[in-house]
Image (cartoon, rainbow, N blue to C red):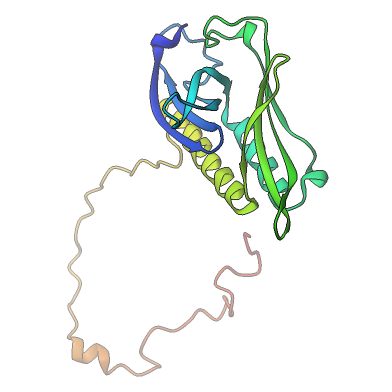
Length: 230
């Protein structure tokens, strides 16, 4: 299976000092094994550079890409939110690993371990220190590259990640043609109409309490009786 069998579904980029991107793709390979989902995601990081004309851009040749699934993205989002809320030590470090020797989406680069992780650091400012959340990726023995967000921005990024992961689950669920909760209606039956004397509306409205509907004294206040089914 190669990249020619993939169809892009949705992608969200987060440009900062470097470029963070999460893409949802569809696998159209007819020989795809049954245990592999039809929809999955690519998490990538691209290093920012300054072009010759002085403009800020991104070097596509430095891109680090990890193929991942919705469960790992949910976990990664939880880690981002935990660090943003000051509970990173409580939840613990979470990392996404990928061995490019086992993937067909490595652009010819083999034998390299890739990793994505979250951390926090204090930045010195004129008014003291500022807390930043770093989402970083690392390939082989190279130094990690990452993007830095304020805690509020980091939580927003994690929320977008969860949105894309949810869509990945929904699409994969729908692709399996599963029907949940559908009930077939019973066939209609032709019931003969009985000749019931019609009663005038004014006569019904004039019925007193003793002439109208009376509750069954055996039922009491509970319509289900003493044996409540729930």
